[in-house]
Length: 374
Image (cartoon, helix red, strand yellow):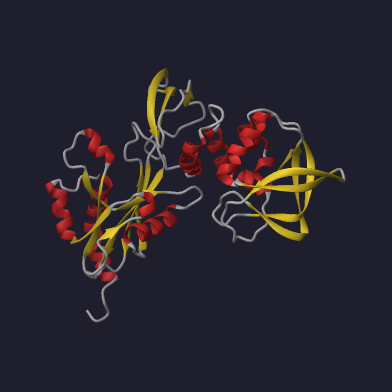
């Protein structure tokens, strides 16, 4: 059966990443449907619409390899196959297409040009990682691919949001180059080996030098604070990095924290994570965005104080069961939190920075949110 490609797979670069080989495809039209943008920025949707049509491309007699690659891709993004009839130069041709998953609701008609300059680079990068070593193991790919999208989204955000360079060196084209990327290691995060050549401060070039970096995703951290009660909420959970360092007590006190999903803003992620982990709706105050360990990891954190009501009778267990989260929630005064920083019981860097920031701004926040009756 011929295969009808529509939507993002009309992008030649993405299609090449997915199929792995050039495909002999011809223009084709599907009547009675339209392509709608997904509300969450994900794969677009095919909707019935008797007045509309979908322009695509028809792959005639695809080989087994191409069919397997496309089937694997669609199992992750649009898993429902449909048998349709498309027109090629006015001639009806039976074909298979895939549709299905996605968050409908945006209502806007999907545009290839808009997608190519918007979310296209993220999807291309994720597809390139997925198929970097041929057909992926689908059991693993089903839970790994969302993280691939998050990694690609983090890289896109880094490229589009440059930080100031008033004191530090302002990088120019050619100042640094990466070569000889080794196959990445890891099932969830990735350890990436590579060679780097870079400009020295004396103007000379240095390299290539072998290096390794842990490639993670961007994340948010939120310290909930009740300015009227002068209380904060801390989350306690077991942390694998602490465990594998050999610390006899791997349970840590932290802010609310979580990864930023693909196509999500840091603010959206912060509000979502605070609801999921603590059941709270907060007003966000941005504190800082930073690299916590730039020498060996790509991790980038957006940190916030979340202004909210923290009643004494709030739930003390949080997290999502389907994400295997086991969280204990602690309410304590800001002074008690500072004491835990001093004693070393709070040993998570972003948590320490948020508590110290809050101590500096406590008086102004308490005045801003003081009860009218006070």
